[in-house]
Image 1 (tube, one colour):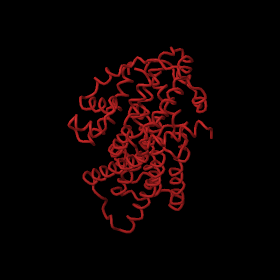
Image 2 (image 1 turned 30 degrees about the vertical axis):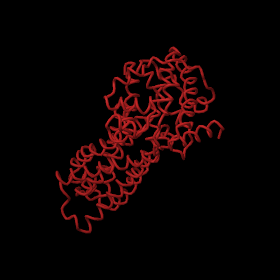
Image 3 (image 1 turned 135 degrees about the horizontal axis):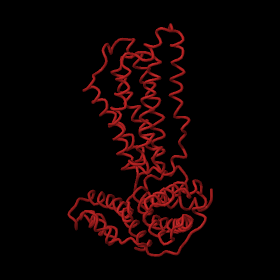
Image 4 (image 1 turned 180 degrees about the horizontal axis):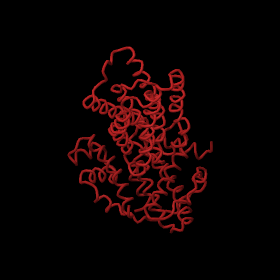
Length: 185
Length: 214
């Protein structure tokens, strides 16, 4: 087991337990790996590398919405790679290009290189949020953008605390669908 | 949007999640689907005649064992394939084992019976009903399992995930149908139960890429 695997797994397990800083850490690192991977693969598929940032963000959102599917008794890197590859193929299909050039086994390759060169994606968060129902939108604004607690958000939105949690969860899930749909789904 | 901003958004106030939710929810929904299929069968066809006789019970037991051995394999793999990369831990060859064992087990009863009786043993009286009822009644559990997959899972091999959902639904439907079925012969079970369950898996595999995208 490589040290990258061990570190990422440790962070992810803490993140699943609700550790905010571990989760921020692991997502930052993953976006570097995903960026490197997608830039290379998109160029190989004859696509522009600028689309990579969109794909990185779409993948992070999808990964977030499905993070409970990581089974900590299993290694982390193959889980990440399966998601990265699935989203790449989905992206190439959606945008009418060949998915045939994506190699099946490249688990190690994914975390071998990281690309810190973040740029802006074409996704506009405010526009995406407008596509959500008002309750989900305000729950996400208060809790995820302004960083208010569940209790504070519940008070401001006049929802119960559990309804706030559900709205945030469903809202982020819907957001990842909206992000994908943004480019001709 | 900057990726760092997205990372901040996603991680801020992050909720703890339970990774065991995947198998729990899949099994719960499969159970609810099974219950729905059972109610549908009882309302439309009802239980078989002489359900309490010893001979009837022996064959009900044989049918239940056959269908549930397929169901166990299907559910075991379904909870694996529900996670990204889970297809690495699914063996298609092992799925075939209960079907093959069923056919092998049917052999001796054919060998012991006189040849003119084979046709009746294989076709039974109601092979058409079995052929229609098992796939049709599999729709309810299939719908329930697909719903659970869409809500709580993230399969990365959609046709295989659909195939396993169909296999589980077919096995559940056959399990329920066994309570009505009066065709009491081992060759009938191995052939018609096997074919209909496999058919459900095939259809599930075709529908998977459409139904399970996330």
